[in-house]
Length: 333
Image (tube, rainbow, N blue to C red; front, side, top):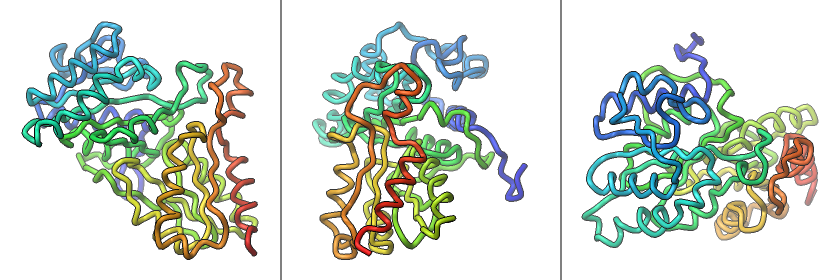
């Protein structure tokens, strides 16, 4: 136990705990996906849940992401609260029609008389040597689709609280779980709690430069900030947590304070969410406080290589954030 009464558990355990607690209190919540029952999921998140909840609520499915998304959409339409697990975020490509043409649009097209309260758990990101078809960050596709919410927690505590809010939401939610974060640890309260969607968190206060990040880039930005602090550069780190809806106020407030902003994400730069974030900042009152241009640090516009050295060079690492932030901190001085 930690001093504040929370336990230190892994991100993976926090996700599992959020699922279990919400399933215990709401019988309409159930899970479906490939190998989530006896096997316990591709990354072990649902291990042990079959024994408690049984095969009706922990439903192994055929190997068809289109069928999983269609079944989840239909169940949500009938009043259930399905949570579908996709082994890798990349495989959402197979379920795109059900997600973006059906689930995302039904509430609007029925004038609010129907809703789709479903969560899509999607292990995302590179760093595991899984190569080009199992390592992508596809959040921009879904942010672009009206009717879908997108969540990308960076810490264990946020993962649990945001997942509970996602389950309770009456809209389809893409819940991104970066694979490298599963084994990271953090202080997490044992009780059931919810963190509201659409509220960013300032993970580190600073005065010289703002780094706006989410998912795996948050711990990397925090590590970079510690290194730069030794050089006298004081970094503020804003963790978006929810990408859609977006907490613009927290971003604008931070950038207005520091006068400089670096946007960091793992997905490729072209068409990436960083471009939208830059536009939000440029079109706000924060623009008048900028002492240097808005900078983006993103993944390269190439498929993720299998080779581990090449894979690492494809997406921003701590040293890349340090170098980019150091240069930006000196611009305009």
